[in-house]
Length: 253
Length: 257
Image 1 (cartoon, rainbow over the protein chains, first blue to last red):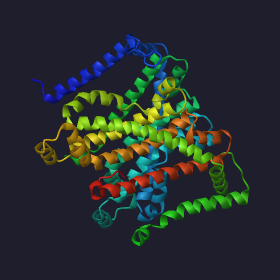
Image 2 (image 1 turned 45 degrees about the vertical axis):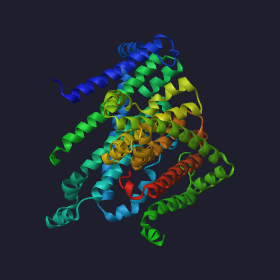
Image 3 (image 1 turned 135 degrees about the horizontal axis):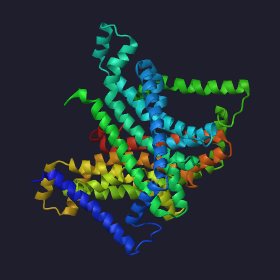
């Protein structure tokens, strides 16, 4: 007896497989030109070949590096600045409106601005990621600090906690769920910005690589690259969710 | 109106004002010109000139047209699929693996594919925007339709409504506040993707205008466009949030931040 949930998951996987099979059939019957829609078996073969001989693994690693270091930069910056602003209601009143104006700005609009400072370099890509992916974490930290219960402030005063101790033992743990949710959002933005940055700056990475494949009409390889991007997106968010679960286990159920 | 005005905290304006005035004074004192950081007054002049000669408004029109077109396609598809999946749990369960496999692919990674199929122009941008705005509408429609009170569906059954009538007259109106929340998220995402696609590849709209200004070493124009994009996004978000309050009032308390 299989539980209903697992059975449904299996059925849903079969549906996905059927869609891939249909795609294969459509390509085999040449209903759509293979330049636009390569058959999945050729995309898969291209993926294996490029990893084996084409140095695709190295490209993926470079993109992961851009994304990860940019994300680290954004997360540290967001938590640090967010703590500095969040700890004081006065700083919040002065700075929060300005920060709220920047939040909905498309992060990619920073490319033209920062290209002028850094040129078409990897540092430029990292700076855009660090700055563009900063906002969710920064604002989450400020919000998390703002929701510390007044009673906890009184407790901290009674216990004569220093400002640093207050941040580390009360405010940051209180803000942790929001900060982690913000960091998850930052990660997605970091991936998007590393792709865009690589397309723009031509710094070697998966984003630049898929653009090259498209220019030379090697669609199976292009689809293989896009598949990898899907994998990176999925795996990275899952990892952060796992981290979130592990870090927040003290909250209990 | 007066009560709303009084609630505005003027302290929020101090920091940007000090930064802008300080930068202007510093620039005028040192007379330093750089190719990356403009004088604040130059940004204002550049924005004024671009507004008067129409280039900024033309670029805005192009971006908004692409965003609107993609949004309409993506949101309608999201609404249709979301309603079906919300009403019939089995359909959502069967589509689960497919959805989870497709959703994490970043829209920008699809730029090369869209370029191959559509070439440069509106079609490729619209297709990517449609792909982006599809997901939030789909997911929030599913949740909203599932949240429709069972009693309403019972009434519909008692009235012997057909499936179509049930959807149009009962389910959609009841789920509309939730669906609108998804639509708002989709609008924000549509603008972001539009500008990103224009910056990365497509010679249209605000993103391309920014890139061209950068290549022409006009930092004043780059910053003018940056603030202009911010104002546009802020205006659209403001309009939608007013619409949400007017249309759904108390039913939309769970709005996104």
